[in-house]
Length: 365
Image 1 (cartoon, rainbow, N blue to C red):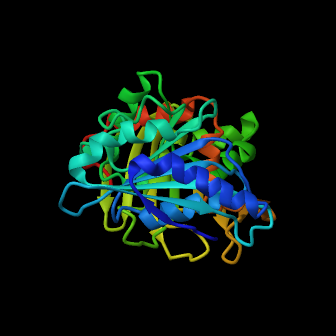
Image 2 (image 1 turned 135 degrees about the horizontal axis):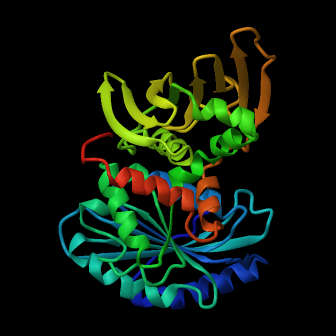
């Protein structure tokens, strides 16, 4: 992807964008923008991933991107650059505007007033907040909560899920639409569970399960605090949908064990790390195994094709032929697209957030 970088003062942004437009126009390359996406992150905190996400996003959903990076360097400064981002090969013949702010910690409160003139009028505005809001800085404290239609979080930056959930609850009470990239990332398994247990007979086997084991990709990189979030969300989603009551949680080496209670008895949920899969993002769910006294159902990703899930079901007397189910391939930008085009705030997401917020701090991750 081409990146035509011009280093400028903040006051020169608009005039630089005009010159950029005129330059590309002469080359028969048009400007394309469906919305404005504002990204806020901290230096070294998944910056590379967020940049790749931006580049991947514009291939199918061109937009103006305002990328704000809080620097960890000492001093008082705001450095700005403007880029023309073009899809690889540029066969589509369009470019997107990329405005990058590198701002010192002492000047970060000024960033809201600096970016406001550069959102595109009459088009939607979205904010991707890629910093832990429980550690001090929030969209509200930085003045970034007034512009966007929707605030999307990157929870892989979060160090304490219960504190994060508490903040999400308070933000939503202000009638702000919220989302999380990790909530979108495990949507294929939510959809698959809904299809597998689509009738009352099958649903009963799920409600009465005594053991539920969720394995996730343990592959780690420096940009990830932890990888249990999707699995944690998944078990919380099932527990709230099945009306289980949370009893407690314990850790045993690399396994987190949740205990729930319902009118059908006790339900144990095991979250385990699994062998690294290069074809799957860190934290991605690899398998789900559901057991009750008489039956067992497993949903397992194929070793060679992560978008293929094998469904196996067995009981005391029979073992059914495995079924293969194809889910959408997860691209770098697929989760952000899902959250941008979701309407409102998911009720299921809020129910899980409510559950997580009741946990004591330090209970997981």
